[in-house]
Amino acid sequence: MKKLNIVSIGLTNLKRQGGRTMVMIIFSFILSASLLASGIIKESMHQSVEKTVNRMGADVIVVPKEYATNYSDALFSGEQCSFYFDKSWYSQVEHIEGIEQASPQLYLASLSADCCSEPIQLIAFEPETDFIVQPWMKKLGIQKLNDDEVIIGNAMSAEVGDLYKFFGKNVKVAGKLERTGTGYDHCAFMNFHTAQSLMQTEQAKNNGLADVNPQSAISTIMIRVDKDTSASRVSNSINYGLGDSSPIKAYTANGIVSSVADSVASFSAFTKVLNYLLLVMAVLAIVCIFTITIVQRKTEFGVMITLGASKQKLIGILVTEGLVVSLDGGILGMLASGGMVWAFRDVILTKLEIPELTSSIVFYARTAVECLGVSMVAGLLASICAIVAITKGEPLRLIEEVNA
Image (cartoon, rainbow, N blue to C red):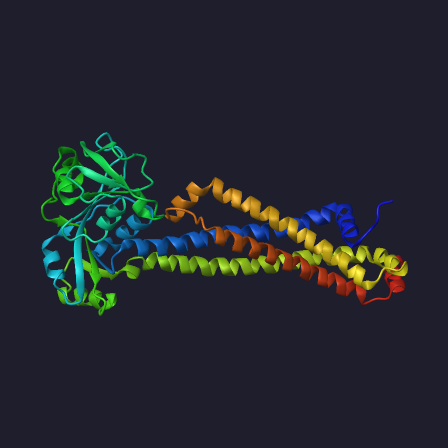
Protein backbone atom coordinates (compact mmCIF):
# COMPACT_ATOMS: atom_id res chain seq x y z
CA MET A 1 0.00 0.00 0.00
CA LYS A 2 1.35 3.38 -1.02
CA LYS A 3 2.22 5.57 1.93
CA LEU A 4 0.41 8.91 1.92
CA ASN A 5 2.16 12.14 2.84
CA ILE A 6 1.46 15.83 2.56
CA VAL A 7 2.86 16.15 -0.98
CA SER A 8 1.11 13.07 -2.37
CA ILE A 9 -2.23 14.10 -0.86
CA GLY A 10 -1.86 17.61 -2.28
CA LEU A 11 -1.01 16.29 -5.75
CA THR A 12 -3.93 13.85 -5.62
CA ASN A 13 -6.30 16.69 -4.71
CA LEU A 14 -5.06 18.78 -7.64
CA LYS A 15 -5.46 15.87 -10.04
CA ARG A 16 -8.97 15.16 -8.79
CA GLN A 17 -9.99 18.80 -9.25
CA GLY A 18 -8.55 19.01 -12.77
CA GLY A 19 -10.68 21.90 -14.03
CA ARG A 20 -10.01 24.08 -11.01
CA THR A 21 -6.31 23.27 -11.13
CA MET A 22 -6.06 24.13 -14.82
CA VAL A 23 -7.74 27.54 -14.35
CA MET A 24 -5.34 28.45 -11.53
CA ILE A 25 -2.36 27.31 -13.59
CA ILE A 26 -3.55 29.52 -16.46
CA PHE A 27 -3.58 32.61 -14.23
CA SER A 28 -0.07 31.83 -12.98
CA PHE A 29 0.94 31.19 -16.59
CA ILE A 30 -0.29 34.62 -17.74
CA LEU A 31 1.41 36.37 -14.84
CA SER A 32 4.78 34.68 -15.39
CA ALA A 33 4.68 35.05 -19.18
CA SER A 34 3.93 38.77 -19.02
CA LEU A 35 6.67 39.39 -16.45
CA LEU A 36 9.31 37.66 -18.57
CA ALA A 37 8.28 39.18 -21.92
CA SER A 38 8.09 42.74 -20.57
CA GLY A 39 11.38 42.22 -18.72
CA ILE A 40 13.20 41.06 -21.87
CA ILE A 41 11.91 43.97 -23.94
CA LYS A 42 12.62 46.55 -21.23
CA GLU A 43 16.15 45.25 -20.61
CA SER A 44 16.89 45.08 -24.34
CA MET A 45 15.84 48.70 -24.85
CA HIS A 46 17.83 49.83 -21.83
CA GLN A 47 20.97 47.99 -22.96
CA SER A 48 20.61 49.43 -26.47
CA VAL A 49 20.70 52.95 -25.06
CA GLU A 50 23.74 52.19 -22.88
CA LYS A 51 25.67 50.39 -25.62
CA THR A 52 24.98 53.11 -28.17
CA VAL A 53 26.16 55.90 -25.87
CA ASN A 54 29.28 53.94 -24.92
CA ARG A 55 30.07 52.97 -28.52
CA MET A 56 29.63 56.50 -29.81
CA GLY A 57 33.02 57.48 -28.46
CA ALA A 58 32.14 61.17 -28.47
CA ASP A 59 31.04 63.49 -25.68
CA VAL A 60 29.26 65.96 -27.97
CA ILE A 61 27.75 65.42 -31.43
CA VAL A 62 26.91 68.21 -33.86
CA VAL A 63 24.21 67.49 -36.47
CA PRO A 64 21.83 69.57 -38.61
CA LYS A 65 19.04 70.90 -36.38
CA GLU A 66 16.24 68.95 -38.01
CA TYR A 67 18.08 65.63 -38.25
CA ALA A 68 18.79 64.68 -34.62
CA THR A 69 16.07 62.00 -34.74
CA ASN A 70 17.45 60.55 -37.99
CA TYR A 71 20.90 60.33 -36.46
CA SER A 72 19.54 58.63 -33.35
CA ASP A 73 17.69 56.07 -35.50
CA ALA A 74 20.88 55.35 -37.44
CA LEU A 75 22.76 54.70 -34.20
CA PHE A 76 20.15 52.37 -32.73
CA SER A 77 18.81 50.32 -35.60
CA GLY A 78 21.17 51.03 -38.49
CA GLU A 79 18.35 52.81 -40.32
CA GLN A 80 19.72 54.49 -43.43
CA CYS A 81 19.80 58.27 -43.58
CA SER A 82 21.57 61.05 -45.47
CA PHE A 83 21.89 64.62 -44.20
CA TYR A 84 24.47 67.31 -44.77
CA PHE A 85 25.73 70.74 -43.85
CA ASP A 86 28.68 72.75 -45.12
CA LYS A 87 32.11 71.87 -43.75
CA SER A 88 32.83 75.55 -43.15
CA TRP A 89 30.92 75.19 -39.88
CA TYR A 90 33.50 72.65 -38.75
CA SER A 91 36.21 75.32 -38.66
CA GLN A 92 33.99 77.47 -36.45
CA VAL A 93 33.30 74.62 -34.04
CA GLU A 94 36.72 72.99 -33.62
CA HIS A 95 38.32 75.99 -31.91
CA ILE A 96 35.65 76.46 -29.25
CA GLU A 97 37.07 76.37 -25.74
CA GLY A 98 36.91 73.01 -23.99
CA ILE A 99 37.17 70.87 -27.14
CA GLU A 100 40.07 68.44 -27.08
CA GLN A 101 39.35 66.72 -30.41
CA ALA A 102 36.84 67.28 -33.19
CA SER A 103 36.34 65.17 -36.30
CA PRO A 104 33.78 65.35 -39.14
CA GLN A 105 31.82 62.38 -40.46
CA LEU A 106 29.70 61.95 -43.58
CA TYR A 107 26.55 59.80 -43.73
CA LEU A 108 25.38 58.23 -46.99
CA ALA A 109 22.44 55.88 -47.40
CA SER A 110 23.06 53.10 -49.89
CA LEU A 111 20.14 51.75 -51.87
CA SER A 112 18.33 48.48 -52.40
CA ALA A 113 18.86 48.50 -56.13
CA ASP A 114 21.19 47.28 -58.88
CA CYS A 115 23.67 50.03 -58.03
CA CYS A 116 24.28 48.69 -54.50
CA SER A 117 24.91 45.28 -52.97
CA GLU A 118 22.47 45.95 -50.12
CA PRO A 119 20.88 48.92 -48.35
CA ILE A 120 23.15 49.91 -45.46
CA GLN A 121 24.43 53.05 -43.79
CA LEU A 122 27.74 54.33 -45.14
CA ILE A 123 29.82 56.45 -42.76
CA ALA A 124 32.89 58.33 -43.91
CA PHE A 125 35.52 59.55 -41.45
CA GLU A 126 38.55 61.80 -41.72
CA PRO A 127 41.71 59.81 -40.81
CA GLU A 128 43.70 62.91 -39.86
CA THR A 129 41.30 63.87 -37.05
CA ASP A 130 39.32 60.69 -36.34
CA PHE A 131 39.36 59.27 -32.81
CA ILE A 132 36.41 56.88 -33.09
CA VAL A 133 36.78 54.47 -36.04
CA GLN A 134 40.57 54.11 -36.11
CA PRO A 135 40.82 52.64 -32.57
CA TRP A 136 38.44 49.92 -33.80
CA MET A 137 40.68 49.40 -36.83
CA LYS A 138 43.78 48.94 -34.69
CA LYS A 139 42.08 46.10 -32.83
CA LEU A 140 41.71 44.42 -36.23
CA GLY A 141 45.37 45.04 -37.05
CA ILE A 142 44.53 47.64 -39.71
CA GLN A 143 46.76 50.70 -39.51
CA LYS A 144 45.35 52.55 -42.50
CA LEU A 145 42.20 52.32 -44.60
CA ASN A 146 43.06 52.91 -48.25
CA ASP A 147 40.84 54.48 -50.89
CA ASP A 148 38.08 52.19 -52.18
CA GLU A 149 38.27 50.07 -49.02
CA VAL A 150 35.65 49.71 -46.30
CA ILE A 151 35.35 48.24 -42.86
CA ILE A 152 31.95 46.66 -42.30
CA GLY A 153 29.78 46.00 -39.27
CA ASN A 154 29.42 42.52 -37.86
CA ALA A 155 25.82 42.05 -39.03
CA MET A 156 26.73 42.39 -42.71
CA SER A 157 27.00 39.23 -44.80
CA ALA A 158 30.33 39.90 -46.54
CA GLU A 159 33.75 38.78 -45.31
CA VAL A 160 37.23 40.29 -45.50
CA GLY A 161 38.46 40.38 -49.10
CA ASP A 162 34.97 40.45 -50.66
CA LEU A 163 33.87 43.20 -53.02
CA TYR A 164 30.88 45.40 -52.27
CA LYS A 165 29.14 47.60 -54.80
CA PHE A 166 27.88 51.03 -53.81
CA PHE A 167 26.36 53.37 -56.40
CA GLY A 168 27.83 51.21 -59.15
CA LYS A 169 31.38 51.34 -57.76
CA ASN A 170 33.18 48.34 -56.26
CA VAL A 171 34.94 48.67 -52.93
CA LYS A 172 36.94 46.04 -51.06
CA VAL A 173 36.16 44.81 -47.54
CA ALA A 174 39.36 45.41 -45.57
CA GLY A 175 38.01 44.38 -42.17
CA LYS A 176 34.96 43.32 -40.22
CA LEU A 177 34.23 44.78 -36.79
CA GLU A 178 33.35 42.75 -33.74
CA ARG A 179 29.72 42.58 -32.75
CA THR A 180 28.60 45.63 -30.76
CA GLY A 181 24.84 45.18 -30.40
CA THR A 182 24.23 48.68 -31.82
CA GLY A 183 23.30 50.17 -35.17
CA TYR A 184 27.00 50.22 -36.05
CA ASP A 185 26.69 46.49 -36.78
CA HIS A 186 24.78 47.47 -39.94
CA CYS A 187 27.18 50.17 -41.16
CA ALA A 188 30.17 50.36 -43.49
CA PHE A 189 33.03 52.77 -42.74
CA MET A 190 35.30 54.42 -45.32
CA ASN A 191 37.54 57.45 -45.64
CA PHE A 192 36.31 60.73 -47.11
CA HIS A 193 38.05 60.18 -50.45
CA THR A 194 36.11 56.97 -51.02
CA ALA A 195 32.81 58.59 -50.02
CA GLN A 196 33.43 61.58 -52.26
CA SER A 197 34.17 59.33 -55.23
CA LEU A 198 30.90 57.45 -54.60
CA MET A 199 28.95 60.72 -54.48
CA GLN A 200 30.32 61.68 -57.90
CA THR A 201 29.04 58.55 -59.64
CA GLU A 202 26.11 58.79 -62.03
CA GLN A 203 24.00 56.47 -59.88
CA ALA A 204 24.51 58.62 -56.80
CA LYS A 205 23.58 61.78 -58.66
CA ASN A 206 20.45 60.10 -59.96
CA ASN A 207 19.44 59.21 -56.41
CA GLY A 208 19.30 62.60 -54.74
CA LEU A 209 22.99 63.55 -54.46
CA ALA A 210 23.26 65.72 -57.57
CA ASP A 211 22.89 68.93 -55.51
CA VAL A 212 25.36 67.91 -52.80
CA ASN A 213 28.94 69.13 -53.09
CA PRO A 214 31.14 66.11 -52.20
CA GLN A 215 34.09 68.33 -51.30
CA SER A 216 32.31 70.46 -48.71
CA ALA A 217 29.52 68.25 -47.35
CA ILE A 218 29.67 66.68 -43.89
CA SER A 219 26.93 65.19 -41.71
CA THR A 220 28.21 65.31 -38.14
CA ILE A 221 31.02 66.66 -36.03
CA MET A 222 32.15 64.26 -33.32
CA ILE A 223 33.68 66.03 -30.32
CA ARG A 224 35.70 64.87 -27.34
CA VAL A 225 35.92 67.46 -24.58
CA ASP A 226 38.95 67.92 -22.35
CA LYS A 227 38.92 66.46 -18.86
CA ASP A 228 38.33 69.82 -17.14
CA THR A 229 35.23 70.70 -19.18
CA SER A 230 31.74 69.21 -19.11
CA ALA A 231 30.04 68.05 -22.29
CA SER A 232 26.97 70.17 -21.57
CA ARG A 233 29.13 73.28 -21.27
CA VAL A 234 30.72 72.69 -24.68
CA SER A 235 27.32 71.89 -26.17
CA ASN A 236 25.87 75.15 -24.86
CA SER A 237 28.91 77.11 -26.08
CA ILE A 238 28.36 75.79 -29.61
CA ASN A 239 24.61 76.37 -29.65
CA TYR A 240 24.68 79.86 -28.18
CA GLY A 241 27.97 80.90 -29.73
CA LEU A 242 26.94 80.15 -33.32
CA GLY A 243 23.56 81.87 -32.99
CA ASP A 244 20.04 81.02 -34.16
CA SER A 245 21.00 81.39 -37.83
CA SER A 246 23.26 78.35 -37.59
CA PRO A 247 21.90 75.23 -39.39
CA ILE A 248 23.51 72.92 -36.83
CA LYS A 249 22.93 72.02 -33.20
CA ALA A 250 25.15 70.32 -30.63
CA TYR A 251 23.94 67.53 -28.37
CA THR A 252 25.63 65.65 -25.57
CA ALA A 253 25.94 61.90 -26.12
CA ASN A 254 23.07 61.31 -23.70
CA GLY A 255 21.06 64.15 -25.18
CA ILE A 256 21.15 62.75 -28.72
CA VAL A 257 19.45 59.58 -27.47
CA SER A 258 17.20 61.31 -24.95
CA SER A 259 14.02 60.59 -26.92
CA VAL A 260 14.82 56.88 -26.94
CA ALA A 261 15.76 56.98 -23.26
CA ASP A 262 12.44 58.70 -22.52
CA SER A 263 10.62 55.98 -24.45
CA VAL A 264 12.42 53.33 -22.40
CA ALA A 265 11.45 55.10 -19.16
CA SER A 266 7.81 55.40 -20.29
CA PHE A 267 7.71 51.76 -21.31
CA SER A 268 9.24 50.72 -17.99
CA ALA A 269 6.63 52.70 -16.05
CA PHE A 270 3.81 51.25 -18.16
CA THR A 271 5.01 47.65 -17.76
CA LYS A 272 5.46 48.12 -14.02
CA VAL A 273 1.84 49.25 -13.64
CA LEU A 274 0.65 46.46 -15.93
CA ASN A 275 2.60 43.84 -14.00
CA TYR A 276 1.15 45.07 -10.70
CA LEU A 277 -2.36 44.84 -12.15
CA LEU A 278 -1.68 41.34 -13.45
CA LEU A 279 -0.33 40.32 -10.06
CA VAL A 280 -3.43 41.61 -8.27
CA MET A 281 -5.70 39.96 -10.85
CA ALA A 282 -3.89 36.62 -10.61
CA VAL A 283 -3.89 36.61 -6.81
CA LEU A 284 -7.58 37.56 -6.59
CA ALA A 285 -8.54 34.98 -9.21
CA ILE A 286 -6.61 32.17 -7.52
CA VAL A 287 -7.87 33.20 -4.08
CA CYS A 288 -11.46 33.22 -5.33
CA ILE A 289 -11.11 29.80 -6.94
CA PHE A 290 -9.46 28.41 -3.83
CA THR A 291 -12.12 29.89 -1.58
CA ILE A 292 -15.03 28.60 -3.66
CA THR A 293 -13.67 25.07 -3.78
CA ILE A 294 -12.80 25.12 -0.08
CA VAL A 295 -16.51 25.42 0.73
CA GLN A 296 -17.07 22.20 -1.20
CA ARG A 297 -14.16 20.50 0.56
CA LYS A 298 -15.00 21.41 4.17
CA THR A 299 -16.34 17.91 4.82
CA GLU A 300 -13.11 16.44 3.47
CA PHE A 301 -10.97 18.56 5.76
CA GLY A 302 -13.28 17.99 8.73
CA VAL A 303 -13.05 14.22 8.30
CA MET A 304 -9.25 14.42 7.97
CA ILE A 305 -8.96 16.34 11.24
CA THR A 306 -11.40 13.96 12.96
CA LEU A 307 -9.29 10.98 11.84
CA GLY A 308 -6.21 12.50 13.44
CA ALA A 309 -4.70 14.81 10.86
CA SER A 310 -3.15 17.81 12.58
CA LYS A 311 -3.86 21.34 11.45
CA GLN A 312 -0.17 21.61 10.56
CA LYS A 313 -0.57 18.77 8.06
CA LEU A 314 -3.71 20.38 6.71
CA ILE A 315 -1.83 23.61 6.24
CA GLY A 316 0.97 21.69 4.52
CA ILE A 317 -1.50 20.14 2.04
CA LEU A 318 -3.00 23.52 1.14
CA VAL A 319 0.42 25.16 0.80
CA THR A 320 1.56 22.27 -1.39
CA GLU A 321 -1.43 22.73 -3.68
CA GLY A 322 -0.82 26.47 -3.97
CA LEU A 323 2.91 26.09 -4.63
CA VAL A 324 2.50 23.30 -7.19
CA VAL A 325 -0.09 25.28 -9.13
CA SER A 326 1.98 28.48 -9.12
CA LEU A 327 5.22 26.63 -9.90
CA ASP A 328 3.72 24.75 -12.85
CA GLY A 329 2.07 27.89 -14.23
CA GLY A 330 5.22 29.94 -13.69
CA ILE A 331 7.52 27.50 -15.48
CA LEU A 332 5.10 26.98 -18.37
CA GLY A 333 4.60 30.73 -18.67
CA MET A 334 8.33 31.44 -18.85
CA LEU A 335 8.92 28.71 -21.42
CA ALA A 336 6.04 29.88 -23.61
CA SER A 337 6.96 33.57 -23.26
CA GLY A 338 10.64 32.95 -24.01
CA GLY A 339 9.72 30.82 -27.02
CA MET A 340 7.33 33.42 -28.42
CA VAL A 341 9.83 36.25 -27.96
CA TRP A 342 12.52 34.22 -29.72
CA ALA A 343 10.17 33.12 -32.54
CA PHE A 344 9.06 36.69 -33.23
CA ARG A 345 12.35 38.38 -32.37
CA ASP A 346 12.73 39.93 -35.86
CA VAL A 347 9.26 41.49 -35.64
CA ILE A 348 9.97 42.78 -32.13
CA LEU A 349 13.32 44.28 -33.15
CA THR A 350 11.73 45.98 -36.16
CA LYS A 351 8.80 47.40 -34.22
CA LEU A 352 10.95 48.63 -31.33
CA GLU A 353 13.79 49.75 -33.63
CA ILE A 354 16.50 48.16 -31.51
CA PRO A 355 19.42 46.10 -32.87
CA GLU A 356 19.14 43.02 -30.64
CA LEU A 357 17.51 41.38 -27.65
CA THR A 358 19.52 41.11 -24.47
CA SER A 359 21.76 38.05 -24.22
CA SER A 360 22.80 38.48 -20.59
CA ILE A 361 22.73 35.12 -18.75
CA VAL A 362 22.66 36.97 -15.43
CA PHE A 363 19.54 38.88 -16.53
CA TYR A 364 17.69 35.73 -17.60
CA ALA A 365 18.62 33.90 -14.40
CA ARG A 366 17.54 36.83 -12.22
CA THR A 367 14.32 37.34 -14.15
CA ALA A 368 13.47 33.63 -14.01
CA VAL A 369 13.86 33.65 -10.23
CA GLU A 370 11.73 36.80 -9.97
CA CYS A 371 8.97 35.36 -12.19
CA LEU A 372 8.81 32.13 -10.21
CA GLY A 373 9.00 34.06 -6.96
CA VAL A 374 6.07 36.32 -7.85
CA SER A 375 4.04 33.38 -9.13
CA MET A 376 4.69 31.38 -5.97
CA VAL A 377 3.80 34.36 -3.78
CA ALA A 378 0.44 34.46 -5.56
CA GLY A 379 -0.05 30.75 -4.82
CA LEU A 380 0.97 31.17 -1.18
CA LEU A 381 -1.45 34.06 -0.65
CA ALA A 382 -4.26 31.95 -2.07
CA SER A 383 -3.24 29.08 0.22
CA ILE A 384 -3.19 31.36 3.26
CA CYS A 385 -6.75 32.52 2.55
CA ALA A 386 -7.85 28.91 2.24
CA ILE A 387 -6.04 27.99 5.47
CA VAL A 388 -7.82 30.76 7.37
CA ALA A 389 -11.18 29.58 6.05
CA ILE A 390 -10.57 25.97 7.11
CA THR A 391 -8.64 26.11 10.36
CA LYS A 392 -10.86 28.61 12.16
CA GLY A 393 -13.64 26.04 12.58
CA GLU A 394 -13.96 22.87 14.64
CA PRO A 395 -13.90 19.56 12.71
CA LEU A 396 -17.55 18.67 13.49
CA ARG A 397 -18.72 22.12 12.49
CA LEU A 398 -16.88 21.84 9.15
CA ILE A 399 -18.74 18.62 8.46
CA GLU A 400 -22.10 19.99 9.62
CA GLU A 401 -21.76 23.21 7.55
CA VAL A 402 -21.74 21.21 4.34
CA ASN A 403 -24.21 18.49 5.39
CA ALA A 404 -26.72 20.96 6.83
